[in-house]
Length: 322
Length: 262
Ligand SMILES: Nc1ncnc2c1ncn2[C@@H]1O[C@H](COP(=O)(O)OP(=O)(O)O)[C@@H](O)[C@H]1O
Ligand SMILES: [Mg+2]
Image 1: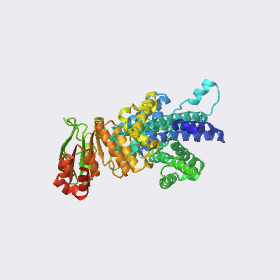
Image 2: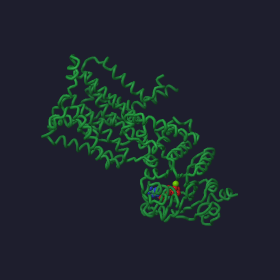
Image 3: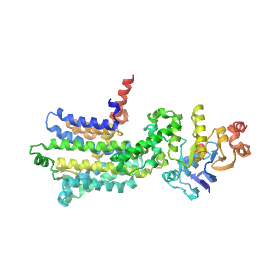
Image 4: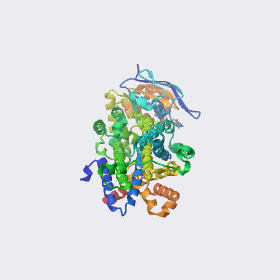
């Protein structure tokens, strides 16, 4: 029966069910916080699934766009008087525009060159955030206004709510929305071109696809996802430091993406879940995060090139046949 | 006016001339074959015509318009389509999806329409799928429609490559060794398909080592050697040309060509 449902709908169903039942297993309300962080990372990772998994383009600078999203929410409310939610939109627009302008020259590069160029972009953004201390507070970070979700709901329904619980559901809905869009794209005219670019750029061009334009589309979309994730993290934590735009965070996002299987939205979310939850569960992981990330990246590349979910699926179907 | 015109076309790679001073025309509905030993510059010629390489000298025209060095996707829009000697399949996509990508020009839509999966996006998807399925049937691969390209045989991929190129509705189709590496049955199928496509009025520029086929279906043949035109003429003229027999046919295809001509 499950096989008659289109894969896109099936993935969304599975995701909704997981989001719904996870809280039943939470021993304390602290876990709502971890769940929220998982969802926020998942949003950035879904964007990278589109860029890396669909279109086959690497970026080692996407944390930079998260930084823009985060600082838009930190700065726009005080300096421009924008409400936090509109600041999130403003951040997404700025990130999208920047990606569009920078992406043009950058995406002509391939492989290592593209990796280095995006790395440079991320470092530039991170440097600006660190150095413009009169605005950003520099490395010490700065406070962020509240999105006002909890207050708003309490006012509406006259109840007492925990912020982390409210955020869990808000971020859960955002992940579903992000996944829905990415899954729509997969089997659409645009998505098919992106996936064909992944396998043969030349063949994609000869069937009439403006490959440069489509790569740019993927880059801009993924930048917007990263920016929204950054905004949400800032609004959730109510505090932000330039670390969000750091190279390490970019690598973290890419590792989550490839760990789960870059081509699949659910895989990406699985990768985000693992790498967000592990440091919370294992203090060793937290202390040696750099080492662990490197180790995981190497192991994935050596033992499961396709990533976690696709490898599991293949192994399982092979078992089922045998 | 010729459909495709090539004038003085040439390219060098690091001081070595791969193709030089090439002139020829292809008329609508015509089959023109390029023959020549390995390394003669046939694929390089295709790469220049289809915009993948920028020629160092000469011009390419379509309907008399200069299209030299135009990007491949612009040439596709003008009705020029091609296949590849070394397969360029979309390996992680199904056979059907490979051909669906070929339908790109007729299904292009604004990105946001696809992101939100608006009804027009789903409708285009369905239409494209039907058209791609028809093309897969044409190359007898409808059974493989939902298999990933990476799991298909070389012969199947060669035919998917042709179906994908046909999906562009070309007016001129460049086929680079379409039957190379295929078994006898597949080769026969591909031969029949090429003749059929030509009958529908699509001009074909063909690179093929199967001399029997070349001599049978070509309107005219151009023989290349070391990147230069050695001879040009009807199949009969070419197979009698002493220079051609010397340089190419003489070594391995002469008898076949003579047989084909009866
Ligand atoms: N990208 C390239 N860089 C350097 N040399 C090339 C390139 N493409 C083709 N050549 C050279 O051009 C010559 C013609 O090759 P090719 O067109 O592939 O021959 P054919 O298709 O007739 O067998 C060969 O000597 C080949 O090595
Ligand atoms: Mg060749």
